[in-house]
Image (tube, rainbow, N blue to C red; front, side):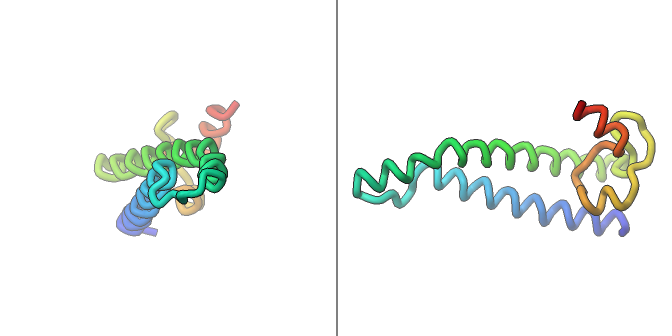
Length: 109
């Protein structure tokens, strides 16, 4: 895959995640909430889950934006920690990753 394909994939992911964040925000604001109090209570039970999903989506969006920034700076294919090349298979699986496998494993520990 060439750099333009990675960029296009990241832009599509950015749109998808932004849409997900907007939908979660609408759900948390309870737009179109039922007038029935018991149904409202049920609808509000999911707020904590929605907030967690929203936070995860915000983190994913930040990583996507950082990957696009790395493309613009010409260092997309290098690990942000050690500077080694990130394998193409890893970038195809996780196009927003900034770390090679070894550094990612160290970070997770």
